[in-house]
Amino acid sequence: MRDYSEGSLTKDEKLEIQLFHSFKQDPWFKHYIYNHLRQYAEEKDEEHLHFPLSPIPKNDLYDHVKFDKFNLFDFRRNIPIRERSANIDSRMRSHGFGKRKTSRALVRVQPGTGKIYVNGKPLLQSLHLAMQRSRMLLPLILTSYTCLLDVHVRVWGGGFNSQVEAIIPALSKAIQGFDSDTRKTLKHFGLMRHDPRNVERKKIGYKKARKGQVYRRR
Image (cartoon, rainbow, N blue to C red; front, side, top):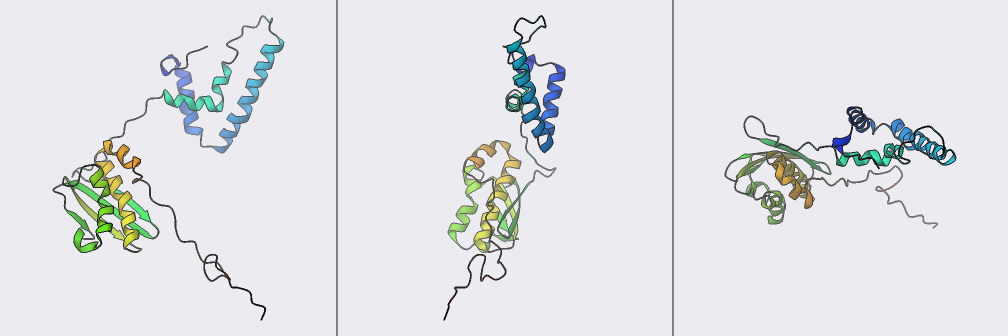
């Protein structure tokens, strides 16, 4: 069986893998890989089975199957992954964006002493509930950057809880941009991804999104 590790691939095969990963989102290309190459593999198998004594040189019986759709995805294990680096500007600042329902949040972090400002006000003056403050500080606590970064938040839209839910992924992305090693921790606790749930729109003829009028005969 042929070795398909990255070091044993030829230059043309590496180029073919790169082209595949660049085209794999194309629906037609997916259809081609799934159907045409699979048909080619089956025809080759039939040829080897029906003409075992043919003088035509035969490669490994299942060599061509390596180029089927599923095995080409396995090449990703051998391709070196580009390491993530910190995304910091010239003033040592990193930014993040988050959203929840109709709320949107922009967060900027920079080295400091742990000051947090929300829309230009200190944290205690902008978020009055302790639960909201503790949820917002969760990314800083888990990454041990509580007293090492100054955080400036600009948030708008929605209510207070919605704004806090928007700040959490924005702050997590900003911390990850400042220190890429924190990404694994933040993803483990689900702080990088925003909540996609939203209010369903009202429908014509209904009182709300799904609530309708009760029919009464009399």
